[in-house]
Structure formats: structure tokens, C-alpha cells
Image (cartoon, rainbow over all chains, first blue to last red):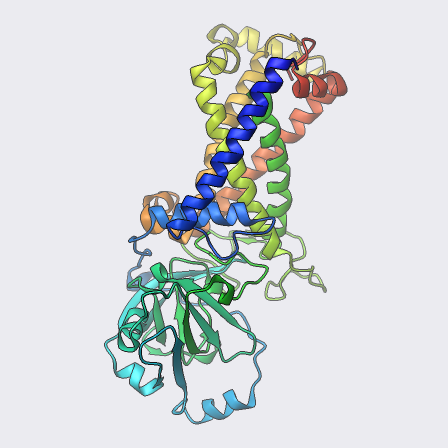
Length: 241
Length: 224
């Protein structure tokens, strides 16, 4: 290691850091930084999210033929016990409501019957769990864009935070995924009503991301501009992998 | 450049292996095709305990779940590895490192010289030339650089639902998402075998002097 090498290496390192700082600024400006881009795994999260946003903005999740549907799908058992939920379940979820608020023109709430009466989209997609297992099923539901159009999204909204009736269970997606045609509030599963074990009566389906982004028992949507409102866990916020 | 990329790759690979094992134990069953879960037959199940109670392993206990940070670490190291791999491959072609040092020489691939080298290795007395790689080293390194790492990266990316939404052929030619996962396991396993032999050969021919040479680029050694 001589002096010239040291200087060269130092310059390269300084240039690298300056380049990274500029790249970070640019990425932030174009909405390419995820809410969990800080912390020890921030660089990895940011690289994945930015790359995916650049190459997958309009791409469609793979859809399968009906003869490719899994005969035996698997539902992760939910330790979800709520007397309120049980009461609704016994009433056939007649009084289940989806509340939409936050950065919207017309905060609203919709009954399950209303949502079921709207034009629906059916798609046969793969649900891949972060654990490693997966299944193919047909999901029927209301495209999230249809809900967003009814309530009127304010232009500064950047994320849709969706909450489960299961306590402390919520997640969020950016507007690119929220406006993606395959992102649906699903109420149908393989031709029937969505069973409770698979997240019924209403489950968010985000087929371009892993299963944990498809939150079960969704009863509230909230639009926000601030990454601080985005709930974070141990798991990477963006899960397109 | 070769030494810098070697060590970033080495550190990343060890962390990828560790986090990969953590990810694997959350569901140590492997499948073939598009989908698979505990309700469908497995291609095979690795006889280890799992970190999730939903997998029937035969063990009476469930390991602690480490999947959150393990996945973040896995992808971050994968990025580091891909970035230095691109640097290394660009350098290897442009500076002639591959042509001069890595591709097996046609003369060495003839039966006699090949069998001589294999016998030398089997006697644990490989031919050591501090300025050059022997034919088995060249073959092994070329296989790792041009076959195993690319396959591992490909099969890893093929498991991404977002990436395959843009490039479906990445996963369909492998036979499905679960096939990609199974192949990823095998290519990673092959890389682990390489790592074991690689470290063993370094140890056999002078662990400290060779490791030092690979760090500092000292004139003595530099080939293992």
C-alpha cells in the first residue's frame, strides 16, 4: 500500500459516498425511497424498492388458468379471537363496514353488501408466503382504485394504510400499488364468499408482493402523505422481494 | 479489484448463507412446480426443526422465528454481492484477468495433465504456483463465477412476485416459483461445497500466508 494507492482509494471512497448522497436525494425526489430506508437494512430496502418501482411500474402479476388453481390451499392459522368479530360472523357480516378516511375528499364507509354490488374483478394469482409456501387461487373483489375514485384522493396522498379488525394488524402500500389494477379488496375466493380462515369477509390482495401484504379482515383504509404514518415491523415494508 | 471484490463476496456469502438458513427453517420443505404448501406433497423435506409451528417436522419444539431481519439481511447482502460481481466481471473481461488467470488453458484440459492434477490433489499435494492458478482451480473458479453465482442469483430473483410480473420467463422456464426455490437451495448448496473445499485448500497450502496475500496483495502467494 503506497501513498498513491492510498490517495486513489481515498478519492474513490469519497466519490462513492458523494455519489450515494446524490443518488439518495434523487431517489427521494422521485418517490423511490421506502419508509424503512433508514436503519441497518435501509440500503437494501431502498435499492430493492427503487429498482422495482423503475422496472415494474405497470407490469401485471402473473395470472393462471383455472385448472392451475391449488386443490388444497393453505391458510396460516390466525390467533384471532374477538367477540365483536364472532357476533358479526354469526350475522353473516351484514354489519361489516369498510371505513375510508385521511387525505380523501369524502370520508366514507361502505357496507359489505355495497362493495359486493360494485363491479368486481376476478383473478387467479399466486399467494406466496414469506415462509416459503404458496398456493394459487381465484380472488374476486373490488379493485382498490374503484374505492379510491369514490372517495376522491387528495393529490398529496402517498400511501394507503389498511387496518385489520385483528388488533394491531395493519400495513400500507404506496400509490403505485394502490392504483394498480390487480390490487383488490377481495370478498370472493374460488367462486365462493371469502372464508374467514383466508381472511374473509374482506382481504386486501396485493398480488405483486408477498402474502404478508395481503392483510386479512380489512375494515379501514386511511390515506396519508407522511411515511411516519406507515406502520413498520421487523419485516421489510416493501415485499415484492 | 480482484481482492476487494473477493472479500466483499466472501463476507456477503457467509451472511447470505446464515440468513438463508434462517429463512429456510421457517419452512424446510421443498416442492416442484408453481406452488406448494403443507397440504401438498413435498419433493422432499429437510429433517431439521422449523421456526414455524405450521410445518410438521416430527420435532416436539419450534425454533425462534428470525425471518424478519434474516430476509432483510439476505437481500442487502445479495445487493452487495451483485454490485461487486458486476464490477468484478467488467474488470475481468476488460483487464484480461479472466483470459490470463481464470479460463482453464486448453493444454491443461487434456486428459494426462488433468489426471495428473487430480492425483496431486488427491494426495493432498496440489501443484502450487504462486503466480498462477492450476487447472483444477481455474475450472472450479470459472464454474463458480460463470455458472453457480449466476444461477443462484437467477433462481433467487425468480422467486420475486414483482420481478416476474415484469419478466415472467424468469420463472416459467424454471418450472414455477417453487421450482425456483428448490433450485436456489441446490445452487446455494453447491456454493457451500465450493466454499468448504476452497477454505480447505487454502489451509492445506498455508492458511495465514495465503489469506494475508489475498488481503494485502503481497508478492508471496496470492493464488489459492
